[in-house]
Length: 232
Image (tube, rainbow, N blue to C red; front, side, top):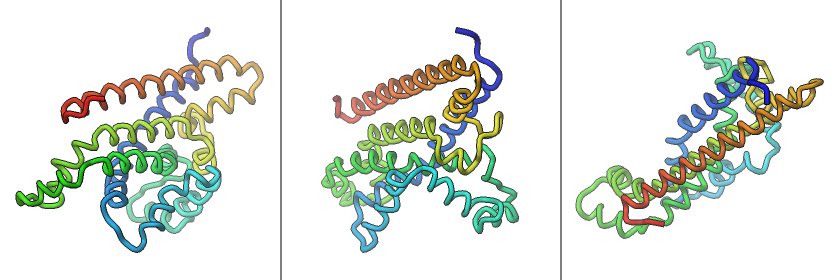
C-alpha cells in the first residue's frame, strides 16, 4: 500500500481535531442534560428529551441545513457571533466541530443518563443528610459512580463525530485542508479516477482509530469501575 498523500494526512488530522473538539465542548452540556433528564421531573421533560434525540431521527442533511440557516453568515446566530466576537462557523472547521457535536450529542446524553439512573439515589441522599450541597453531592458521589457511562458517552460522541458526513458537508462543504474530514475525503476519492486506493487507506485508518478509541474507553471504564467497587 502506498504512503499517505498530503490530502489524506490533512483529512486525518482535521478529523481528529474536529472529533476531539466536538466531544470536549459538548461533554459538560451532555452531563448536565443527562443529569436533568435522570434526576429532575418537570413539565417540559418530554419536549427536552425529544429535542435532544431529534438529530438521531432526522436526516443529517436536514441538521446541516438548519445549522446553515442559523449559524451561517446571514443567519441570526451566525451574524451575531461574527459581528460581536468574530466567530465564524459556516465553511470553517469550527462549523464541522459544531455539526459533529450536535450529531453525537444524543448518543452521549443517552449513555450518561443511563449511568446516572443506575446510581443508587440513597447514596446521594446520605451525602445530602451529611450537609453536602446538591452540586457537591453530584461532584463527589453521582459523577464518580457514573464515570464509566460518561466515558462511554464521550467515546460514542467521538466515534460519531469521526464518521459524520451528511451534516458537515451540508454546513461546511468539502474544502480540502479546511473542512474535508475523513468521510468527505473518502467520498471525494471514490468519485475520482484511480482514487480507490486512497479511499481504502482512509477507510482502514478510520476503522483503526475507532477500534483504538473503543479499546481506550474500555480500559478507562474498567479502571473507573474498579476504583468505585464496581468491577465488571
